[in-house]
Image (cartoon, rainbow, N blue to C red; front, side):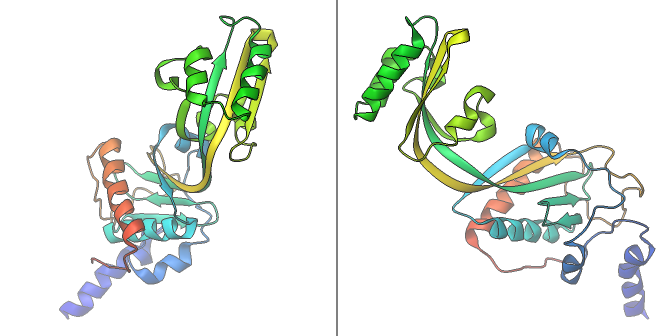
Length: 258
């Protein structure tokens, strides 16, 4: 009698759901991996990328990071809807959250910025670029000629992703090959850029963002295990990324904690 009652209670949220449902068992994950997110009002991807917290996973494949994200979230019992084709996972937290996973590229870039403080910055940039291609030390030349200091001191930007660069240089900076040098001249504003790519690597980036008004048709499902209730976005993201990092690099097997 008690056993039957427990089974009925577990099945009730699934039987009564009139829209997106909570993934409560491992067998349901395959059913929802092609979801169209019917009934949910999702934010635009650019909003998630621009406003959400993010973590970069180098030396990992998209499949590894995706599978690890599913494992971490399913252990919390908070997955609402997923779509591997779009890289989206929606969680039934309070407030709801969207996880977006995508393949990306990072580059170690070195940058020298020349402006009106230099006489004829375009012509000077071409000469300095030639010196770099002949083997001259980029750092010394950056310290000597670059008009940008602070984080640009020495010219080393470290690993950086395309969207983090200003529009004027991002396309060219991510079109050159490892070891190549390019010059971007902007004579109309008396500015020139020298860019050198020291390293190129593929990465997987995971974005995490809390969203409001996610549920368009159904109310927030009461069946969800609200693991992150009343915790602000930064703490939610930190907790999620800590668990995800451990999962990705430890390559643990499936562990169901319910």
